[in-house]
Image (cartoon, rainbow, N blue to C red):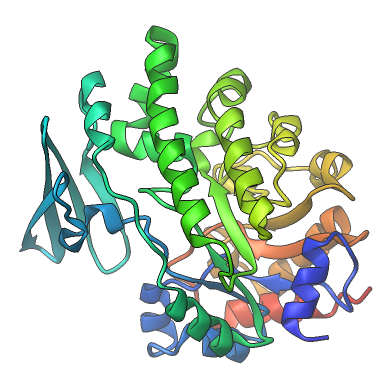
Length: 366
């Protein structure tokens, strides 16, 4: 089988020729330091992995100066110090101005000042214009990928899921407190984000060359919020997004890079085709016993992830990596419907450790 056939069969809850094995992505920093800037698809092939190629999406487009409109005028300034770049944004609308700040280095980007500071600020978000995928770029990437794996992408906004997006804009602690202090406002906020995301889905996903669409986010995991908060403030919005994407003909993977064992039933209710990241407690999750997840998801939701990319992958011996691959296959993958994957991004890992990981997983045939 080709890698694409193998991974698509797993997404369809079937058994391919062997266990599919991949990483969530191969970050530019890692490819620069370990693979001499080799392209993503070429890296996957060189490592012996099935490719998980992530196509660019408009997550950050609303914060680009080129994203200005008559009612959403963007201004960006930057300053560099000690290898880090500070970015200051302002968004002028007819009824006021929003500001935010980010910082970035060679590895990643993070928020240093939230976009939404007061409850009334969400009204200004309504002036934010929507975005469009570059479908020609998707076609180019899809063709470049060929049969080497699957092409993934996300949706519109700062992050894919409405709750995750709101947490990035307002702060996760602030959002949690607001669910108690002013739940009506939280629903209004999430509703504004949902309307924009649904508009983006309707205008962009038809005919798009992509295999899997990412929704959700780590802030929806049960190590960040309670199952009760998830049920009221994540599930209704996740469900509408997932169904809108599926109606157009694409599969959805719901991402919870944190604890998930207490919200397995809720994840199933959001209609996703697949669930990731099956994270262990060593990387902030709570999936210590794969059977807890498998007993719920097997034959219903494809399982993706499980491999500790922070502690084990870069630091483990070949024997330890091989033993963990065996544990995950026996725990999640015996009946098919499983793609072994790192639970999230990694930035530092010797190339040979990924080769051990890929080789071990490829040995498990169905």
